[in-house]
Structures are given as structure tokens and as C-alpha cells.
Image: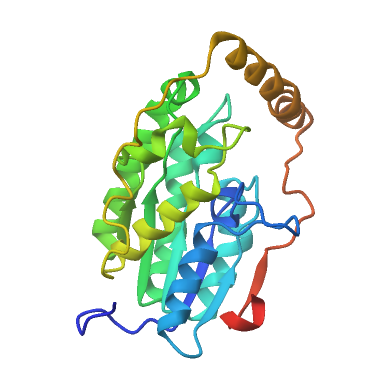
Length: 261
């Protein structure tokens, strides 16, 4: 429900990487939906003629986002722009956090004046050893996000602080991308961040406890993860390739939402 204090946003442009593209919220036709599509659907249901573009492409680093997506998004003149980027950089063995923060600053400085409302995020992380290894870099990035938001009047959706989104059950078997339920909760978080009345006030709460998988099931899952996801990921890093090489944005033009459904 939109109140009189919430501007009637009529357009949305999403900028980022695989998180914003929608992996791993897989649809029957093999495409990805994700939180940005779910958010756009909600906004479109309340605003006739609502327009939506999603420029995100999996695997993109913050420098690529700044070069390839930010100028396009800024030129679209959308009411709302969401920007999530830099996490792929933090996962690289050699990551210059000063450069990452500088590029994120450049992106915010270009996008904030081009829209009515810029939305940034403290991205979620799957609880486990990988998160613990890269947590210092992530938190350094999130401090930068908070500072930029305050400086430029952006909103921040705090996904990192939500216990539900750290739960491994919210993550796909690749351990890098959210499930459909995870994306639904992210859409709810951004919806509320924009000032809308909650449809799920408990989206952030811890998941109900269940019995953990047994030792044998965990080992099978670990082997599958290493074979199907970890080794190919390492191979791409060693050869300088990306999962998004040659892929176009999922919704490159700012068009009425229903025409892209």
C-alpha cells in the first residue's frame, strides 16, 4: 500500500551482477526471475504504465558495472535505480579494496542525481567458512555503502543483517546465489526500504530449526558442489573468463513492465 508520503514511482532500473540478474531463481523456461523482477511486478501492480529495465549481467566486476551499465542507467531517467556491485571483486584472491570503493563511489555519484531515489544494499552472505574468510572485505565495502548513502540521499536495504538470508537453506546448491525464497525475501526488503507497507514483516527473522543433514549427505553435497561449481569457477579465474562473457542484459530497455513479462 502506498501512502501519501511515498512518491508514486513509475519506473525502475536495476544495475548489478548475478544477484540482481536473479540467479538462482530459475523459471521453467530456463531464465532467471529474481528479486528485481518480483519488486517490479509489485510496483507495476500499483502504478499503471510502470516501466522496468534490468541491466544486470552475471559475473560482472564493479569496474565493468561502472563502464557498461551505469551510463546507460543514468541516461534512462528512471524514478528508482537499484545498484548492487563489488561483491564479485571481494571474492577475488587479489582485491584492491581502495579501487573497489572508488569505483562504487563513482557509480553512486553518477546515478544519484539521475533518479528520484537510489537504492543501495548491504548484500547477504551464506553462513559458512567462505563468508568468514571474506567477511572483512565485505564489511569494509558495506561501510562505504553506508557513507555513500548518507552523502547522496540513497536508501540502504540491509540484507547482510538479516538472519534469514544467512541461512544455508536460503542458498542454491552453488552456494553463491539465493533460492527463489531468498529472492522473495530480498524483494520484500527493498519494498519496505522504499517505504511501502510490509507484506511480510518477518522476512528477516531466523528460519525455523530443522535437523541438519547427516555426515554422508554433507559429503555428497560437498563433492557435487566442488565438481559442478567450484572447479569451473576456479577454471574461469585462471583463464580470465567470466560466466557473463558475451551475455546481454536481461531487460536492456526501459519499457512497460507487462510487455516484458
